[in-house]
Structure formats: C-alpha cells, structure tokens
Length: 488
Image (cartoon, rainbow, N blue to C red):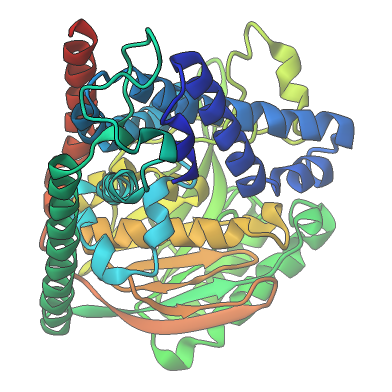
C-alpha cells in the first residue's frame, strides 16, 4: 500500500526509483542472514559479504522497480488496476527462472498460516495467492489527497498524460471492491471445501509411517574426517531409537553420510549393518560420483536403501545452488570459484524422477529445490504419493532463514495435495499434511527423531497436471495490456 500510494503521482523514472528502494529495504531485511553465512562458511570478510548482499538485494529489487515503472505507464486507471496483479505475477514467474532462478520469499508465501486462502494454489500455484494480494492492495489503498475530485480521464501531471490506478473513483472503485469481495469469498469458500474434501480423502487413503531424523551436526564438523564415524553412528542410533514405532521409511537429511556411500567399505558396512538391524527402508543423503572416460561427475544425492542394506535407487539433485554446488561461467570467470570455500563442482540429475518402494512413491527435493514449485509438481505428475525434502540448514545459523525455508515447503504440499515430510540436519524437520497443516515440527539445533503416519494420496490437482499455466497466462496478459495501453 505505501508503494502504491507513492506511485500515484510519479513519472516512470520516479516510479522505478521508488519501487527499487522499496525492494531494497525489503530484500536486505529478508536475506540479512546471508552475511553470517558468507562470513562463517565462505570465510569472507565483512567488507566483502555486505556488498555481496547488497548486490543480490539490488538485483531482486529490479523486479519491483520494473513493476512500478510499467504500472506508471498505464494511461487509464481501470487498466492499471487490471494489470497490476498480472504484472506482479509475471515478474515473480520470471524471477523463478532468470539467472538460474531465485524465487525465495514470493509474496504469496506470506499467507502460509491462512489455510483457507492458500488452497487455491492447487489450481494456480503460489502465484495465485500473490495475484490476490496485489489485487486486494490496489483496491484497498486509499486515494491520495491529490487525486480527490479528479475524474478517471483527468491527467495527474501537467503534460504527462499518465494516470494512476488510484485515480479510479466512484463506480470504478466500487466495481473493483465488489470483484475483490467475490474473489476473497470464493477463495475462502473453495479453501474450506478442499480442506474438508482432502481430509476425507486422506482418511480413506493408504498411509505410511515415516520417521524423520535430525542429527544436529555442526557445519564445522560435518566434513571433518575425524568426525565421520561419530556422525554416522549418531544418525544410526537416532534412527534405531524409533524402530519401536515400526516405521515404513526412515528419512535422514541432506549429506547425512559424510562419505561416498557404497564406495567407502568400512563406513558403508556400518550403515548397512545398522539398517539390517532396523529392518526397514531408509532414505539417506550422501554425495555420489560417476566415473566417465575423461572426467568424474559428482552429484548431491540421496539413496533409497532396502531393509537388507541394498540400494533400491538414487536421486540426484536437479537444481543446484550457484556458487554453493557449481560455479556459473567458470570458464570465463574462474576467480568466482574462490567466493565460497569447498564449492562443489556438481552435475544435475533428471527432473521429475521418483524413488519407488512398495506402495511408496517418493518425490524427493534436496534443500533449496523445495522453493521451485515446478519440481514438486513434476514428481507428483510422475506418480509421487509422498513429497520428501531433505536439507542441511546449518548454513543459516540461528536466523529467520530456516523458518522461511520451512514455510515455503508448506506450499508444495498444498499445490499438489500431497503429504510432505522434511528432514533437516539442524532443523526445522517436520510433517505437513496435504492441506498444509504442520503436524509436527522440531526445534532448531536439537537432536530429534520423530515418527508420524502420513496419507498417500494419488489424486492429481490441476496444478500438478498443468503446472504454471496461470503464471504464464499472467505474463501474456501483462504484455498484451501494456502494448494496448501504450498505443492509446
């Protein structure tokens, strides 16, 4: 609302500046924790870490600047009101893919605890909630005093010929509010209906008992060879402590095994012996590699291990973290590899691949992958009956980042109406039902092993089947509306 208020009487250049400043203030406070991550684990001095945060925040702020600038070009207020939410969604969608993508903290995620409002994501994705928020804000923002008494066809600035969406008055604003009431009422009603329907479906569906394990291994110890055996034994001990619950699957975090499983004979034997004693399936994060003629390819992976200790399949992470798991443009800018120590030169796996075990079809996302809606959707479309997120959030320390990460995972469950389980090295681990309820969640930086029964639903949502059709439609609508209005 404050941003829209300030745009009411701004030129495109001023609007871009205002949007950029708004974005900068938002992203610096949203992503402040990156400074500690870069300093603690990347060994960067503060005078390097702070400018890098500003650089990332400035890049993300460009999207809000462009939103503000384009909105200021709308020459008829009613078209501005129609264009604003579509334009915002189009830019969020673009941010999901541009420069490898960074869709962290999209606007729709702010409604994570309003279950009735977020059920529409099983049709529109998280972008549908963002659309609703922008539409509500642009209709509820009061008209600035400078616009009172001005009609819809009155220029706001001498010679500019540009009007603000907030200059809509009388009947136009009344129609906008009526549409908003209908949208919110319809969204809420749909949410109540879907929650009741999937609660009933979950009760009649098969279920599986899942154990998630949180080892709370300090990042400084994780790859220290002196701690490899103790780390492995800690995870096995925590897992076996839940065997009395008779779980169908035990889930360990990303790189829970700090060695190459199946290639380190001593530690692999320890793990297989522990799994045989537990007599259940395990899903364990571990690095992996593949020898080729001229090179060795490395992967951030997870193994599905049968009760007899044999491997039933492996998932390789698809969407890698720039400068954390690979170095973009390394051929032309090799010095960038020095930004973070221990940068892995990893390869990507196959999008949408699932792991199968009995009645369990696992759609796995490793760490950061969970913030990309299309990846979970592809797995649900390929038959996944349970979504699993394994991660190592020790990088974030005690900050808001683990909470942000967990909240975004909630939307992947709701979009696809799949139960989701999450195992994190230092937290937050937990269980999320298909309606987005958080069934259980562990505290940060504590050892934990928790078991819950989760439904295995096979029904596919509209979002699962058709993906980001709504966001793509918004992109087309924003472009067409802008082109049409710019000619008038």
